[in-house]
Length: 150
Image (cartoon, rainbow, N blue to C red; front, side, top):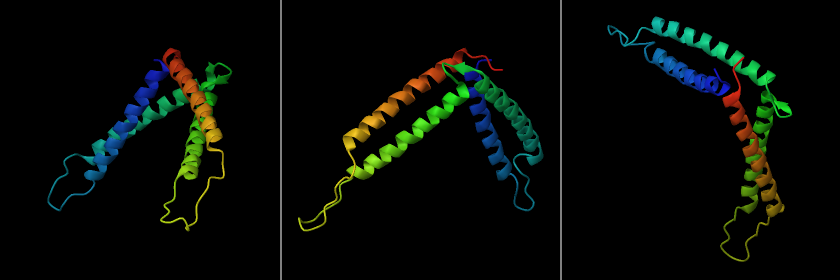
């Protein structure tokens, strides 16, 4: 199995686990005299089996990410770098929005707000980080489809 396939399987498994938890909660209590639509004990057995599968899959994915080299980094390191780039982009976009928001002035005598940062320079930084993010994400995605799961 390729790493990308394992990641898809993990996402699907997480969704099914979430649905099973919801089904257990929905059937955990019924009105006196009624019977639940599904047996919670049977759902619990299904849930436990899926959690066991998920644990094995996560261990394999993490091991593969840690031991597989992508350029100068392991995939795990590349993912960490990508996540930090994403956080930087979001933070700087929020700062840019705060600096460019126009306050409402009803007359010339009201206080005028001015930006304290160079918005053009900040946008260049955002664009640079965005480019780095896209390039790194593309490399990770490409590598996921050629890397065998350990």
